[in-house]
Image 1: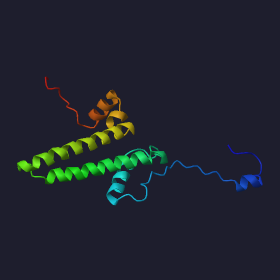
Image 2 (image 1 turned 30 degrees about the vertical axis):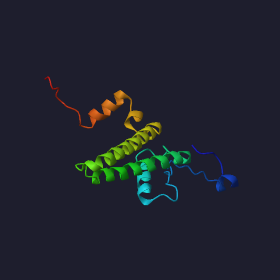
Image 3 (image 1 turned 30 degrees about the horizontal axis):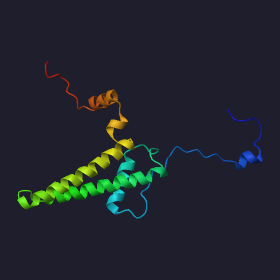
Image 4 (image 1 turned 45 degrees about the horizontal axis):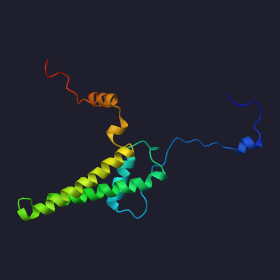
Length: 141
């Protein structure tokens, strides 16, 4: 219910703006195009208020590790491992890829982006089963 009587001059000029929209975190300037795409995919995968400006350094690190991991995976895919002389290079690339994967999973968990950190075990099972991926009949039935 509104106020009674005529509006004062202050009430006439005062306007209250309320908004529920959040601006999504934007990639910092200077990032490569591919890295900007990864950054935006991660930001768009969570609710709008999930990240703020203080998360930019971690996001930059995460995106860098993802990008490096993808480049290493491309080199691994191109390498002919049937050639014995490539095995040492192959082993080194696998170790590099493993380090990048560990860094990615650590950052994902710490930033609460992984499924493990966003679901309790019970909620995870419920979400999995309600998505149609569950077995309706038990194997022993």
